[in-house]
Every structure is written in C-alpha cells, then in structure tokens.
Image (tube, one colour):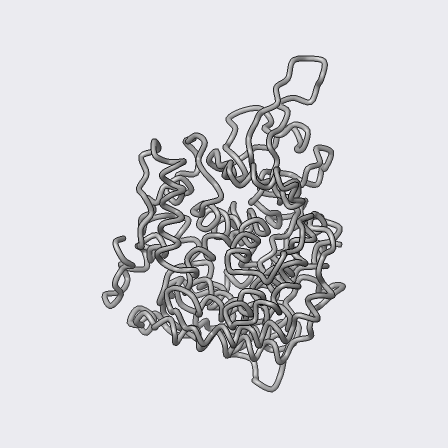
Length: 507
C-alpha cells in the first residue's frame, strides 16, 4: 500500500532544503550553507534530510519527474524500442533527443545534470554535518543516493567533477573532470558502506527506502557497466558475479510469479528493490511518465476508457517498434499485454460512431481507471517507477556468469524470466544473445535498453541505433546516430562557468 504521508513529508522537506541553499553557489556543487551544521542537530532533522534526498527523484517542484526526464526522454526515447510516428509542436527536447539533434542547451539535459548534483549536494551535507559514529542508517542511505547519482552521471555524461564534501563556489568552478575510474572507485566504496549498514529491505512505514539488497544490486550493475564500454574492465565481471551471487537467494524471495503483478498499485514495494515513489491527489507527488506514452492532444480525451475527461498528454507521437510488437505477439509473450497496448477507442459511447485508434504505445505506468478521482492532472499518476527490481539481478547475474565461463549456472535465472513471460525454457545453456533478447523484452518502457546497448560496445550500439533510425526516421530530418550519441553533452550553463572542461565529443 502506498505510503502517502511519507511522500508528503518528502516534498515538504525538499522545499525546506531548497530554501536553505545559498544562492551564490553553483547548482553543480554541494552547498556550504550557513545553517547546515545547526540543521543536523538531532535524529528528527537527519531523518527529514534523508527523506528530502529521495524527493529529488520525484517531481522536485517541477512538471516532470526524474524518471520521465532521464529514463524516458533521454534513454528509452533514444533507443531502438521507440520511433516517431508523427511530430507535434510539443516537447521539442524529446524530439531532438530522438532525432540525435541534442545540443548542450537542451533544457532536459540540463535538468538531469542539475538534479543529480542536487542529490549529491544534499548527501554531502548530511555526511559532513553528522558524526561518523551516529545516524548509521541515514548516513548509509545518503551514501547509496550519492553513489546512485554519480553512477548515472558517469554513464550518461562521462567524467564529471567528483565532490564528496561541501565546497565553495570558487573551488567548484576550478575542479577538473575526474576520470571515470576514480568516480567508480568512490561509487563502489559508498555502496559497500551502504550495504554494510542497512537491513536487507524495509517495509511498513519505511517501504520504498533502500536496503542492502538495493545497494548490492546497484553495485552489481555498476560492475557490469564498468566491464563494458567505454571502460572495458573485464575484471569487473568477476566482481559482479560475486556481489550479485551474494544476494540472489534473497532476491528469489522477492521474485514476482506473474509479470503483470510488478506494475500494480497493490504490489508496489513488494517485488522491487529501489523505486521512485509516487502517489496521486497530493501537492506535486504524482508521476508524469504516463503522459508521455504518445502524442499530446490539443482537445478531447486521448484514452476515454482509461482516463478521466480532462486528462491530456505531453509527448511526441512515440510508438513501439513494430517488429518487436509482432514478435512478442507471435510468441504470446506475457510481457506484451502488461507493457504495451495496440490502441484505444476514441469515445466511450457505443451508441454513436467511434473509432479504434491503432497505436502500439507503452502503457506500463498508466493507471487505467477513468473513475479515479484522485488523479488530478496529467502529471499526477500514482504508479512507482522501478530503478532496480528482481529481473535486474537475475539477468545481470546470468550475464556475469556467462562472461565468466559459467553459462550452465546461468540457465536457471534466464529460464525463470522466460517462464514468467510464458516462454519455454532454453534447450541448452544461455548465450549472450539470449540475455540481450530477454533484457529487451523484460524492461520495455523502463529505460534500460539504451544503456545496455552502450555497455555492450561502441560498434554494436552505433550500428543497432543507426539501422533502427534508417528504417523509421529517414524522412524526419534528423541525424544518424554516431559515437557522440553514446554520451549526453555537458550542459552549456555548466561549460560557460569553467575554462578547464572540454565538451563531450562532437557537441
């Protein structure tokens, strides 16, 4: 059951922490703020500050949340899962990202960069102003969230400034871009410390807060990212196997027997390991993601049988790859119906003429209930967004085993994913191609695909994305993807404040 009161607290504290910030400090940097040492004076303050950090991944006082900006617009939107069926005048940043026309002035890219550093800033403040021998759980959560923010920064932007304590403006603008390997060293240390000081999972009033399973799952993902492009650190596969193997039994106990059950309000925080928490009917605590599943509507209701009368959409007309849809339908893959709809009726009444609009669209995070009066706006959807869940651990662990020459040991985990999807078990030991196929189908709409393609190699990523773009987007005046598109540009508002940073390749 969704903990509405907890989320209210997150937003309230988020606003408080924002107001406490010193305006003279750049957004990129953790703020050395004159009242911080007084704010962290007792456990209530420290707990509130910790909850406020989680809120940075929600709406954070804006129209869109982190999942929408990052996992949908900047990730899924750039992969080989979605194509543009027709352009609208709305959300031009999304259009530029999809067509590989993104520039350093992109508002979406700037928002992602700033939000992650805001999270780092607040984690640094808490860790700096609290004693190392007190508030162990809160400090562990702060280290997890700092590690998470850096893991997304380094895989999306490449080397960035590594900051682990509050610093002043003058020092911040002089910082160089820290090599990725050094950033990963800090991420690993933070996650190991977090895992050692957290319970496995938290339930009840603390549902949705990270535990040691989440810390180790993220650490495993980090190792698998390090093992791939661009670091290509092959030794990280063994490290991933070790850390993911240490939690696989516990994750089995959280493995959802039915795929569709992963995406219902009743089961939130039951099967996942780390999710962004959302709820409807509150001040800026709902999700905006579902509103980007297809094109914006100038009038009328786009999904009458699913949503209330004044609901509207925000994104470009993005549809799911037809080849993928046809393959999943032919194989009767149970993940299809839970993730994708092939269309909707344009009116409720069967008395008057109505039309079934054919569109293959991702509806995994759309709460389909036109009687739900708690949903107040397009960005007030109640469903959580999973950043880490059971299949992440199963498939990353299986991939690490294969890379380490233990494909036979990986079979049970790939088979478990396939069986849940209504697919037959593999005839033999799984291959990397089996892993790639299952990850593509398992995580539709969840923003994994783009990052998978990148870590599997520069050539594979560019060729896969280029082939897809040539097929779907040849008439849309975009660019074909190239090596530069494997990273986002450093935002221009960051580049202009410092003279010792070079912009990412070809931006």
